[in-house]
Image (cartoon, rainbow, N blue to C red; front, top):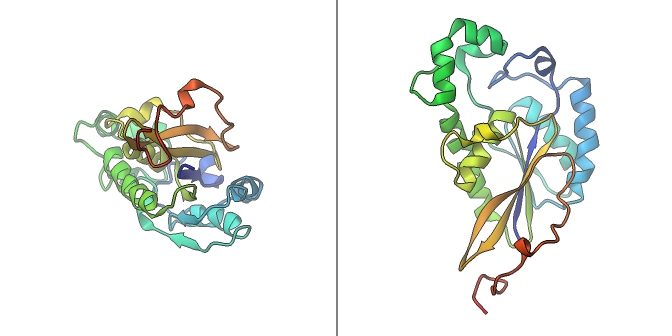
Length: 226
């Protein structure tokens, strides 16, 4: 059986509703966000996760707690899973940020080197999160699942960096709904293994893919050619 990592975005906050970028500002869940976590948690609990790891920001931690209340694992906290640091932009709407820092905002998306004061780049955040995912992947046994609770931009950039997509490719993937998940799965490929994106922005676990694309091309359980 394959290893799996589920990246779970936190539930809704008041700033989500207002369109204000949160970054590493510690904004709590609102009532709807707590409800979303309670609804989504049982579906993830059915996967019987071996580990649950969360960002230390309160909106992610509270979301993760809804899951660990249902499973026999302890919640682990890793600050590397925090949202992208948006520096002085935090608390502002997208329109306000573009009006104040048009060149720096363009630089953030086009990787020109310009950035908003105090911010990190999307690529820096993606590599930070990907580092956690590599650690988690190495810790799992075959067939085990880990749930990693993080934030919208960090999940998008981190997942893409983890599976080896070039910098900037995260922008071709949609944003994540509150409490939606990205499913990553380790698969056999030729003589070895690789991780791939199995499902994006999903509220339910992936259904089996009945296709020859999912077949085992002459490989044994450990990737050895039969």
